[in-house]
Image (cartoon, rainbow, N blue to C red; front, side, top):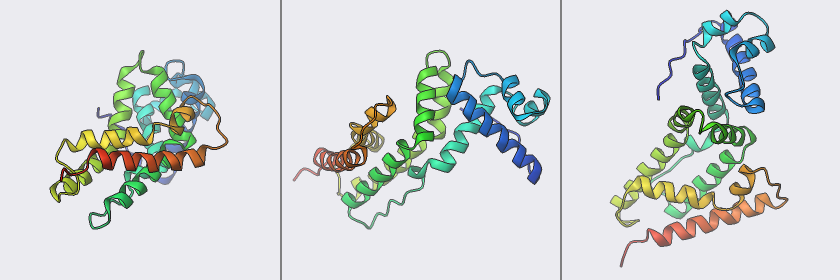
Length: 210
């Protein structure tokens, strides 16, 4: 889903825009998308609603800006290196660690919780979030896995399905507790164990038949 957001090039305008995005993120995470109004965000920042609308033509466009801001600052999984000349186990382990560091960061968790909580009333928000974040990460991993299949390092199959399976395996443990806000004193240890088991299970499942 494409949301057009006007670009503001001058420094003052850019700073003002960032203030609006930060205020919107705080409001969305605290009150939900449906209960947050453009007027309330403008009131928090100060100034007229007209000024806010000049930056963002709709609340959905403002939500898209919040998503982009959170992902840009915390979405390390979208930029982690996936070198083809390195052992696949090492690459998957690195990707798994960065993926979980991304998913377990508080801003990303808050974003996931917000989207899940509003998915029934505002399904387009889930689509927007998926297109701007998770889909991009899965596409990068799928390209890497497709090349591993071409080189005979993995058995042939649907690369995107394989990417989703690996991501799901990484999230099978500590992430489930984190997304429900269940505290765990051993989260870091559990996460490392989750990643190691995910890599082992994935490689067994996608091993080349000999």
